[in-house]
Every structure is written in structure tokens, then in C-alpha cells.
Image (cartoon, rainbow, N blue to C red; front, side):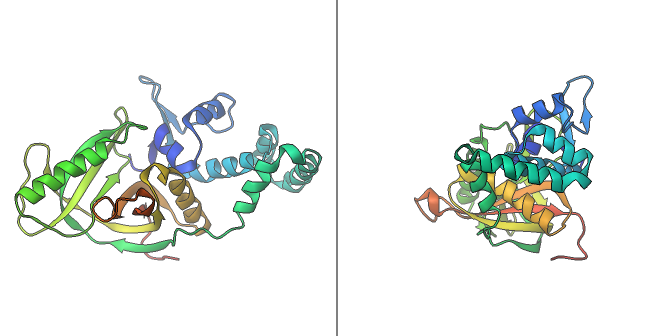
Length: 268
């Protein structure tokens, strides 16, 4: 079901670890929207992302859990809560440098150069595979297989490679589709399929750096969507604009991270 997220996906999008999310469930601070009776899998809704991000921000500022619960249950007490917290930070300043650092980062401009655009449809060679974080090797393995298949048959590339992470799968881990856009007649073979990437409106951020650092970029993109009051579906894609064929330095990789949006009529 679109808009329903397994715990690993919700963790990636909100910056809260699965361990933290389980604890917040146990103390009834942030509970899953649904728990499967047979498997006990936790499922969160896209609508819960806003609250989860706010809870993470408040914790990064050092706010105790009981005060966070007070903010959630009694938003009219916010000023009192923040006055008490300011006094607490002032008294414990040597132990709160990390929290103050996080506060200052919120005042800085994010360098990801966000944009909204309608991504076009593409004919692709694709491999659907299962992703179980932190084992991400299935993605480069699938890309290598697709590139070898295309090169051996002389196919013409029609854009950067990418992968799409949808929410419609309920199995263990997550089902992802690794794609290679191809122009002209094309045939699949084995697990390589010929499929159409439908495209659609998306909020996109350009991340520069190695792939193992993209997790923080996902959380930052969610915050930007919330700031712009955009409604995300939870479906994401990564487009490898500048990668291994272009540079040997992982710090120079450029990746467009896209969050697909629900409402196409108005873009900020």
C-alpha cells in the first residue's frame, strides 16, 4: 500500500534508528500505524513523518522525553517547556555542546540545491531485487549486470542509471528496481526485464559525496519537503548523475535523490 512504510524505510526517511523507533513504540511516544498480527512487522504511515522528524529535532536539542510528550499532548505549553530547557542548557553548558551545535546547524543553508520537477517516463532495462539494509551491494551488482548486458548488445543509453524504492512490497527487506534507461529497440534476458519508468512530480536534492553518506541526505530532503508543505508519497529514487565511470573519487560522486509527490498542480 502506497504511503505505508516498513520500519527500515521509516528510519531512513526520519533519521530515527529502528532501535529508537521500537523504544518509542514501547513507551507509547510514537507508535506504528499498523502492526501485522501474524509477523509482528511494524508499519508506519507517511503522515507520521512530520511528528517523527520533530521528535528527532527535539531530541537533538537535548529535550527530555517527558518534555517531548508534554509538547505533543499540550502544544499550548510550548513556551514554558522551552524556557525550562534554556535554563537547563545554561546550567549544563559543558555537557550540552553537542545540542547547541545541532541548534546552529538548523540556522545554516542546506547545500543540496533542491528543486521540484516532473521526471519524464523512460524505457529501461531493469532488475528487481531485494534490499536488506545495511547490505546495499545488491544495487551496484545489478547495475554492473545491466551495463554488461547493454554493452554486449550495443544498446544506447538514454540517461543516468537509477533505482526506485517503492512502498508496495510487504516481504522481508524492501523490493527495489534498478534501472538503466535505453533508447531504441531492446530485449531483456533472465532476470533483466524491459520496463517503463513512469516518472512523475518529485522534490529532488543533488547530493555530492560517497554513497555511504546519503542517509543524512534523505532526512534533510524530508525536512525540506515539510518546510515547503509538499506531500510526499514515500516512494524515492536515486539517479547516479556522476559516479564510477566519471571519477575515481567517491567524494566527487553526484546523486540526485528524488522524493515523489502526491499533488502535481502546485509546486514551490
